[in-house]
Image (cartoon, helix red, strand yellow):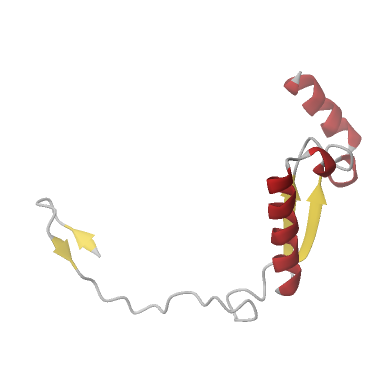
Length: 93
C-alpha cells in the first residue's frame, strides 16, 4: 500500500510471495535454529510472571525445533568469555 502527497491510499500489487511461517520452509532452513533468552539477574530471582514467560518461550521454541538457551549473569561467560563479562561489570556499576 502506498500513499501520495495528499495521503490518498493506493493499493499496489506485489509479485513477491509473502514469507512463509513454516519453519521448515525454504526461507527458514538456512537460518540457525537457535533462540537466546537472557535474564541478567538470574532466573531464580526473576518475578514469577517472568519465570513463567521464559519457561513458555523456551517450551514453544523447542516445540518448533529451535535450540533455546537461557543466559544469566552466572553463565554468560560460557558464551562471550570472562573478559567481556568483566567489562560489562565495569560499565554497569
